[in-house]
Amino acid sequence: MKNELNIRRPSVAGQFYPDDPRQLRELISGFQIAAPAEKQQALGCILPHAGYIYSGRVAAKTLAQVNIRDIVVLLGPNHSGIGPDFSLMPEGYWRTPFGDIEIDSGLSGLFLGSSKYLHADYSAHLEEHSLEVELPLLQYFRKDFKIVPITIKADGLDSLKALADDLAGVITRHGLLNSIMFIASSDMTHYEPQQVAKKKDALAIKAMLSLNEDKLERTVRRSAISMCGFAPVAVLLRAARLLGAKRGRLIKYQTSGEESGDMSSVVGYAGITIT
Figure 1: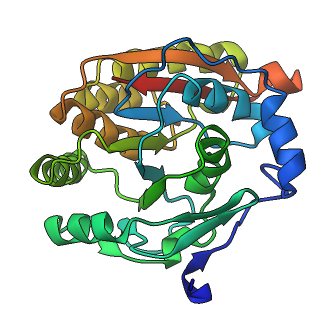
Figure 2: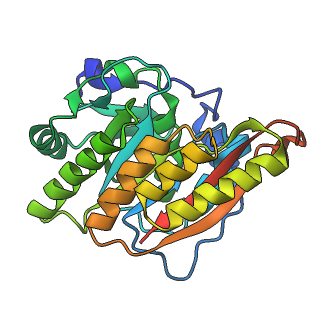
């Protein structure tokens, strides 16, 4: 029997995406995403986390390209500032309009026991949308998977690298490589004109496709790119590379202006697979 105290209830259902499961399914299916003949065996994806009318098509098209694995390690920015720098919700369920998703408490325990950076914490997750919005999209493409949700507030590259090393080490030592994938949640440039955003985001995307977190950090800093999920993406890039990833692929890029028609102040969205 589920402990109701360990259920993380939706925070932005009815705002970022429909809270009615039928309407939610219709919205996602309305993106008309065709699955490829052969899906990628991806170690990770980078997905946006805005309202579905703006970024849902990017995220859905990206997820349609990959085989979603048994356990999804979710890495997202901490927008609220609540909780520790690295917060892992260790057990329980996350509820969406499509149903409950179980946290893999065993893997959560292994991560917590192997990294001095991670802290077992619920508070950082309660109102944070960056991980929540990915879940219904994941459920649309696969019903039966577990998650390990991690939010990141710190942005020092040394600690991000160390966390990536810790996560990859657990996966390697316990022979979990074929069972796990990472999702890093990030929007790109925020509230700049369309052409400025596209130019800046192209630089960051090039760095991400190189699977080089150092290059990404330099690019974001030098070009003042307001990419809210730099930290989780940096962890993904390093962890995936340590686990054998060789290639990043841009699946789709667009801005909010392409949906709203307002090109004067846009947010950029990129969907990338890591294989």
